[in-house]
Amino acid sequence: MNETPLQVLNRVFGYDRFRGAQAEIIDRLIAGGDALVLMPTGGGKSLCYQIPAILRPGVGVVVSPLIALMQDQVDALRQLGVRAAFLNSSLTPQEARSVEGAMVSGDLDLVYVAPERLLTERFLGLLDRVRVALFAIDEAHCVSQWGHDFRPEYIQLHQLHERWPQIPRVALTATADAPTRAEILTRLGLEQAGQFVSSFDRPNIRYRIVEKANPRQQLVAFLSNEHPGDAGIVYCLSRRKVDETAAYLATRGMTALPYHAGLPAESRRTHQARFLREEGVVIVATIAFGMGIDKPDVRFVAHLDLPKSLEAYYQETGRAGRDGQAADAWMTYGLGDVVMLRRMIEDSEAEERFKRVEMQKLDSMLGFCETTECRRQVLLNYFGEPLPKPCGNCDTCLEPVATWDGTQAAQKALSCIYRTGQRFGSSYLVDVLLGKANERIRRFGHDQVTTFGIGQELAADQWKSVYRQLVAAGFIRVDFEGHGALCLTEQSRPLLRGERTLRLRQDPDRKKSTGAGRKP
Ligand code: ADP
Ligand code: ZN
Image (cartoon, rainbow, N blue to C red; front, side):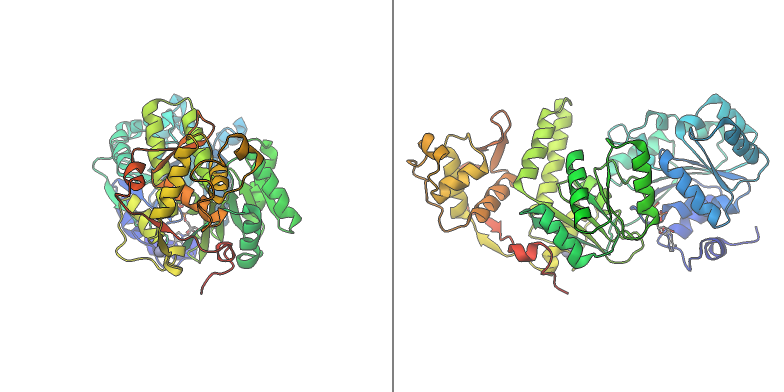
């Protein structure tokens, strides 16, 4: 071999040095060993198999479920002068035959293949006639039956090892938790593989969560104060909200394009292409957008709705700042989100035990929103990677959250639920606490209960925050049979009886919470 991996990195890719474990992984594969690579999104997984594929004799076969992105990856490689091609259902039979011909004649460095095509007897037979440099199994967590991206074909990929035991294999994923990792190792027969687990910290991403007041205006303020002309992604839960938000941002002079599964394939393609190729495009999307998107200069990811787990939050925010430059993960969050997500889980057709897991994941997400500690510490801790010191680059580090003794307020809030019969949502309860004798309250006779008007010391927003925190901390349960009514839990008893105290998070005032009050 005449060139070293570092020389290829310089000459072909134009980079000075390897990042993290890239060099070690590449050496291991070139030497013929197997590897499992766990790296966060943007960590630089692709080079780990591209460079060995270039340096080892033969073609590197990359299995990827992301058919839509193969074209982009291959275009990018060709521009660098790498002999790359892909095989998927978008090719005509003639085009596919010509790629296969190039594989057999040894004229390719890399070929990207969808798993269902790779696993056909015909293709496996073709591989017998091809010199294969390595097998790279991208998005390897798709092999996990418990994950959200499960692909049954991935289970069959262990055949590669049985048929060609001498060809090195590398499995790559950004999904880190220990059960998934173990599943990848056993299902793909990688027990002997070297494991390369990177830190999941993304220090250049600044995490910030603001209380939801007027989310659209808050978003516009955030974008125009901090990201004028920047490319970014805005996530919403529903298709309708995606359409409305994109239209609204467009009226404010931004290039904002919608993306969701309800749009015609053609619009999805052009919007994605414009986001990747033009500067300063804001994509407003449901979670249908993003898996595998390689755009290094995404400067912000904004969430108008709460993701349903910290895994989802981490994946989505991880699309920001892949180039290592400062980027923002910004989210608005309110009690309505919690109620809606709980209801979606409750109403789903899934099995009970699955729902329980989903609820627990949502609770971890809520704990993250309501924490008074460093957000990065909470996030990394969840992924089993404790961070020894507060990060200094999240909202709670930059503007430490004040707490207050919320014991009395919590008692009032809870007893108001009790006195009105555990049948109402937070808006109604707040009106009762503030002593607003409106028509509805009079009709139910709740202007006569002992909690009527006992909450004048706090404003409506503050009471909303008290209720949200009590829900997040498990003192209050949301009852879906009762249309989102708030009910007491066992846990609320000691608090009501005065047997324990409670500190609550002091939400920063609105002006700050739009992001305008950011400190240097
Ligand atoms: P992943 O697949 O892990 O999400 P990629 O392989 O797409 O990440 O890499 C993310 C970005 O980082 C890409 O733009 C890539 O070119 C860049 N990159 C990867 N390795 C290096 C390196 N050693 N030096 C500089 N940039 C790198
Ligand atoms: Zn922090």
